[in-house]
Each structure stands twice: as C-alpha cells, then as structure tokens.
Image 1 (cartoon, rainbow, N blue to C red):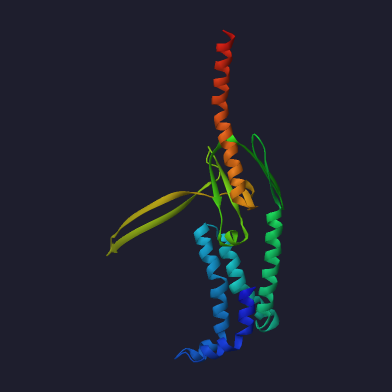
Image 2: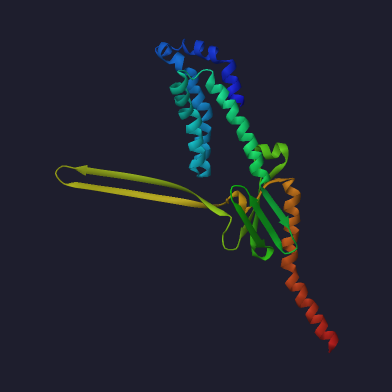
Amino acid sequence: MVISVIFYLYHDIIIEYASTIPLLGEWISSYAPLILWFIASAVPLIIASIVKISWRYALIGILIGLVLPIILWYFRGTWYPYLYYAGIAIAVLGIIGAEFHRRAHRYIITDRGLIIEYHGLKTVRREILYSRISDLVLEKGLLGKVFNYGNIVPISSSGLGLGEDTAHVGVGAGAAKGVGAGVIVAGGRGVKVARARSYYMLYGVPNPERVYEVITEAIKGTEEAPYLKRILETLEKKTSV
C-alpha cells in the first residue's frame, strides 16, 4: 500500500528524473516508474522466496510486479494510474486476508499437551503430548516485536516442526575435439531449522514470551512427574514395611 501511494504521488517526478540519465534517459524515462515498481514489489518477495525456500512468495511478486501491469495495459491501454489503485486494493485485501488467516488458528494448552487447530479452507487438528516435545522454538519478526506477537514451534522427537536450509556449489569443466570429456564436482551442506506449516505450530500468538514460559513449565512438570512418582512409590514401600 505504501509503495502504491508513493509511486502515485511521485510518478511524474520519477519520469522527469529518469529523463536526465545520460544515453538511456529518452528510452527509459516513460518506463522508469514501471521498472521501479517491479523492483520495489517483486524483488523483495523473490528474495523472501529464496530465504524461506518457498516459491509462493516469488509467484506473488511476479504476479504483482510484472503480470498485473501487462494485464492492465492490455485491457485499459495504459497501466497508469490503475496499477497504483490495484496495488492499494491488493494491499488492503492482503491485510484483511492475513488477519482472517491468523484468526483461523486456535490453540489449547492442557495439562497433558498442546492442541492446535486450524479452521480455514481446510480443517486441521494436531495434538502433541508434552512428553513428545523435544524442543520449543519462539519466533518473532520485526512486526512481531512492534505489536508483540510471534510463533511458537513445538518440535517433536520424530522431527515434526523441523525443516532444512541447503546450499549447493558445483564446478564443471569440459573439452571436446572429436572426443568429449568432462568433469563435474558438486557439494552441498544442509542446516536443520525450525520450520512448519502454520497449522502445525502456535501461529500469531499474542504475548508469545508468556505463552512460551507456560508451555516450558508444563514440559518440565511432565519430565519430573515420573521421577516424583518413583520416589513416592519408594516411600510408600518403605512405610508399609
């Protein structure tokens, strides 16, 4: 939304400034707002797609930054100022959709474990016992720090709640003069990270530090329970003798 408003207000200034660029000014000036629009709207989402290893963000960025102007140009004969109106409308719908998505997640903290429910386009219910939780991860992004909300990812002993970030490097060489030959050397490294679908974790939790502490104390209680039970049984046996 902010990008759309800024581009709408400074559209003519961007064109005027681009026209002063040596050599490319005359050719690029009329397309400068469109090029900057693609950079501002699509490139951050493409970078987020690479970081999060999810092509969904890149697809959204390409649709907004490239496909949308083409569609407007085809049907309206021009993309200005309709592109900025469409950008504001998409931003508003995105905010509303994100809030509905957050509210579709519910969680219940019991004395035995966590119950996580999602009631959106599909219904998902996950129940995980405290005794099955091997790790608990708290995530807060930049907006989460401002508005005090975050995600809590329970990682089970089976590895549910874990993902992997990988990086690969390859080197190749070849030669051909009647006879072909080639050598390829490749290597990669992966790092386990906390990552799960939103309906497999406590998503968009207000005051997440407090919730994290409550769950942590509950996990500690279940870990201590078997030992306390054994001590109690031992004392009962001694007193009965």
